Image (cartoon, rainbow, N blue to C red; front, side, top):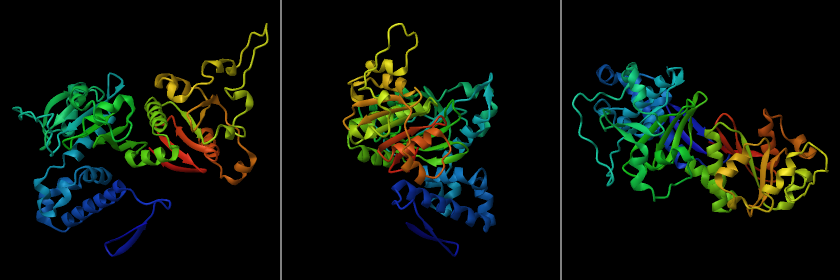
Length: 399
């Protein structure tokens, strides 16, 4: 629990009995910095004239900006001298998200050059006539064609000027052999690597209408479903990795789950501690170990007639692309702690004793995740783009 005082009131914040992570604490400090700065502006006419731009936009965008780059809010006396380029970039993405081009949603992004040394990249000289990377750019129709967020992004200097267009893959190539702090979706690995050194920030608007922000080699913040969410992927992945107990298995399932979420495909992975625990959860006919033969002359075949394709295989021996394809089949993929595949596309059974003690939950996949988490560790992928970790009947985290 974290206690704090603000404007004469005392607050206590808790995280379901868990300790607040470093990033959660940092975000609270960032909110305090923004509110303090705004409070001082309101009661100082001279400062209000200089720093009025800090009152523009949505407050939560400023909280995210201060979390990523606290310099505009670090010193109340110099706020007017430090440009809040992160908030400006977020506004560009917000405006772009409301725009279509030739009946297609806009996807765009920017790489904000950091303030720390970067031995791999040099900041280009300021071009003549360089424009600020701000919402004013969105009025230029061709602006939305300059970069697509997946392969190319705009490069913004430390003063917030648009100075170049860069290929994300090329930018990240010098860091190709550097391990990421947390597994990343395949399509955004380059974006994560682009921020591994130099303190660079990468902000993109995806074709799904989601805003993703990368820093220090990982996605740290996202805007999805009408609200900002602190991804905190490094801390959450550590919890998942420790729960599974097998680093390779944890990384493989986590990566596949993120890829499915990016494609807006639902799925469910259940990791049992012991294969014997599958008995109350999965029907015997759904287990890969159960051989089912189709009677001669019978034209129809059930899904379990395809079980031979994966029978006796370990999840770690199956190609990630194959695993992603199989995970898209309605139902769950169940495996044991040794990564042995027990079933795929299985509709999980709900023991009565568990159903009676659980509150009603919207969504069959969520209900199945809660039930299955009584037998092991569960990753649930929703078609809304979220990945959730369930254990002991509770949702531990959501990304």
